[in-house]
Length: 314
Figure 1 (spheres, one colour):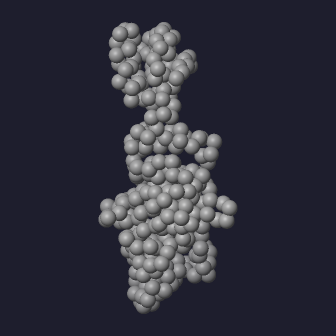
Figure 2 (cartoon, rainbow, N blue to C red):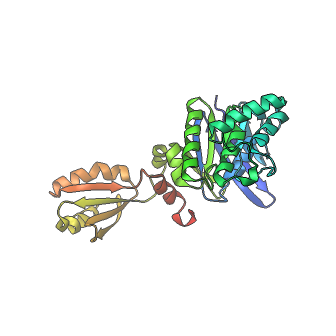
Figure 3 (cartoon, rainbow, N blue to C red):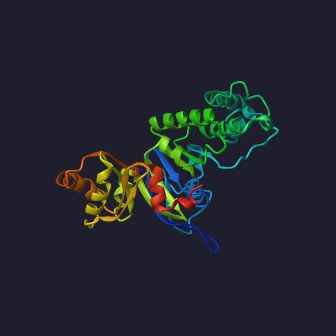
């Protein structure tokens, strides 16, 4: 059974629609929720956490309604996008405080908090006041608080925001470890590189709507009608014009352009599968030798740009 299920979920804030008709199953492992700021990622996560009720549709977490089932909330670790600290507390006191709210004794809470903070590299800082922490240390403390319960599900909203490279690497290693342990991890981000380094399982959201879900290869299969560019470099640049003219005879080629600076032909096609099947036949018949064929379609950046448009990507 999938850990998290959204069925036809819509959330309205008055006349503003946060998310619209989203249906998805999120299984154990790492799933990236990718989209620009304001896309609806945080709204979707609030539904999973039970912090907000859908206007339409149904959300199920481990078979239960997260909005009404409070008992299972200690099985969900949450890292919010924004800081929510008690600045006068130490990191240790802060993490232990939340454990005591779940009926752990002070001694149990302190022991568990020390272990969680130490695992994230805060051995020497856990007794210091949070107001003295760097941004990276604050991110680690938020993750330590979420992980201290050993939850089954992690909901991580922009967990790398403001983190330095060392902190980012450490957090990624912990998330991969949790995934290997069979936990369900939802990671929202507007940073393509972060998601690409963590998982191939992605959900693309923009303007409150789910554009696609699955691994990048499945998503690419959904993009058959979206034009993409393929770069072809003949061994002899004198063949550029000949190949461009020949390819324009094919229905699956929308346009060609010669890049003289790089001695390559840029081909726009809305049927890459046909292109890769037919191109070898054409260049053999025309006696054109090619030294390189390159497409950016394996890049998550390329997928997102084609689905949404690069201007919205910051």
